[in-house]
Length: 248
Image 1 (cartoon, helix red, strand yellow):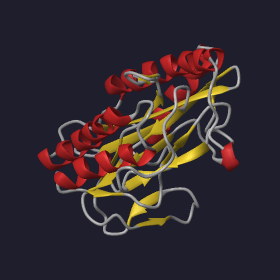
Image 2 (cartoon, helix red, strand yellow):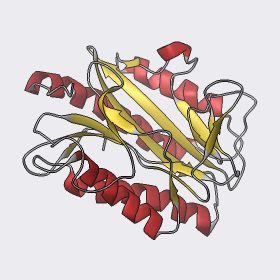
Image 3 (spheres, one colour):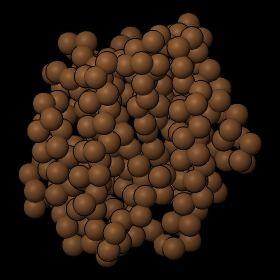
């Protein structure tokens, strides 16, 4: 069942989203060659606590960190480590869920570490652009897969692949609610969008094959061919007009 949120519930998600957005913006100044992925996680945990909120990923299904930090061929769910040192030319995705009074906002960004290749920048830019193509259809009356189709068209039109095994989702008092939101699909399919739906829309895209494996840590998802991956996500409220982005 897709849960329609009340104004009060959306207000709490909006408050969480502001802190989420703040952290992701500040990471632009922190991510640089020589820091560890654990440094990123510690900054996230400290900042969330300073705002009196909860980093909901920590402890979720025993996940050990406050944020998912995924480097290069890691698509999602990378576990931060003191031993994983970022190098010039890497790309790193940070996925963060912030909770306020029991309601959550979810967002992700991919960052370049120092100077990156033009190909890597194109991949990162395409993930973001695909999100904004998708949310042109994130309004009352459209079908869910109108969003999915628009994302797929943009990504594949730029020569990249769309991950199949992991998708976006509804969000609210639970991190993962109905509906599931693929980043591919046929327009005109899926449930009809209604005002008050809250969706975490998140293109996850790759240089080459969209096939993935999960590492022995049972979390980190990697491309099978070693190609780079990029991730861009915001929590979105469906309205009868323009959607509201709670994490931007």
